Image 1 (cartoon, rainbow, N blue to C red):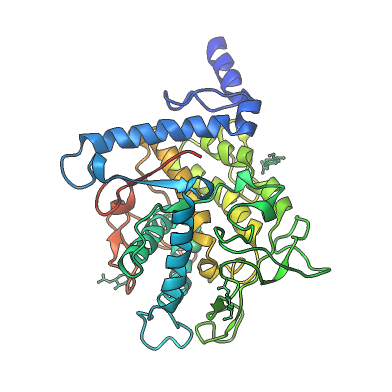
Image 2 (image 1 turned 180 degrees about the vertical axis):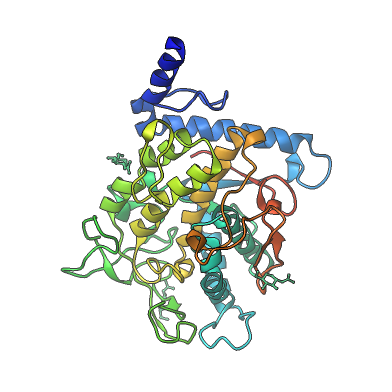
Length: 382
Ligand SMILES: *[C@@H]1O[C@H](CO)[C@@H](O)[C@H](O)[C@H]1NC(C)=O
Ligand SMILES: *[C@@H]1O[C@H](CO)[C@@H](O)[C@H](O)[C@H]1NC(C)=O
Ligand SMILES: *[C@@H]1O[C@H](CO)[C@@H](O)[C@H](O)[C@H]1NC(C)=O
Ligand SMILES: [Cu+2]
């Protein structure tokens, strides 16, 4: 009895490492410096690669694509990615009769708008957005010829110096700069200081991007409402909810999928050892960018940074899964937001909708990033 008590106390100190044998224990300094998450990322990478190495068809080791943090990508890929997104903005929409869908890029806004009530705060959140990013990767390749690395953005590397982020510094190799500073504005989320922008993006790539759809509050959100891209980079939000510690904590203190996905989305759940997660890293990453459409729950995917942000969310899911792969191929919850209206418990054989951008797949088909039907990629630690 005493020894069990001791075990719990020791595990409660810093990490819930008793759960999966492969998870080492870390000091707070290792967690805060990023040493911990880099090690976890490497374990996950090796485990996923080992699975691919055993495959004889489908996603074999030689076919696995390696996703990287934006600043670890070559300059050519950073430019190539950003130019391919611009190319989608000039390519025709696949929707009929959506007045605001002016391009293949806008299609992502329409799909996300339709799917929002069915793919957030529920069983589909992680795997639908995983597949959504893959659909974009396919479009960048098939429509715009980009075959380079697909990116993710580790917010935690930029908390406190957001406008110097290689993603948002306004350089030729970024996704454009911050919005121009608007005095006396509030943060897009309560409990945070205002950001450093708020107005239109006027430097770098996407400074000429016309946002067509939304906002959600418009009477007809799918009608054309051409306007500039706005950003409001926010270091305070990043420090409070998207720091390297915040991100690593989710990996270390959640041992089942229900807790993991709730912790990420700031649903007030408690993790191992009573850990709390505040507003959650999903909200933290989104509101570190903020702006229009960046802060718009339904249309945020029209912000080019969205996919790098969700790349990081997917990377965390990938790491978490691969730290204990045999036990972590499950889902939890239903197919409606906060189960409202109430709906059936989701099954791995349930459908996820991506038409007309790509074919629908089942939830289970997106479970393994090296599963080969269709996914075949891993995340490299930064
Ligand atoms: C934006 O448009 C102007 C005018 O067409 C052009 O001179 C400028 O190079 C464009 N900037 C970017 C980043 O595409
Ligand atoms: C996020 O991490 C920072 C330190 O990086 C910490 O001050 C803050 O309390 C954490 N937030 C949550 C919700 O744990
Ligand atoms: C694809 O998914 C959407 C959304 O769930 C659904 O409305 C549509 O009928 C599906 N299409 C097919 C061919 O199953
Ligand atoms: Cu979403």
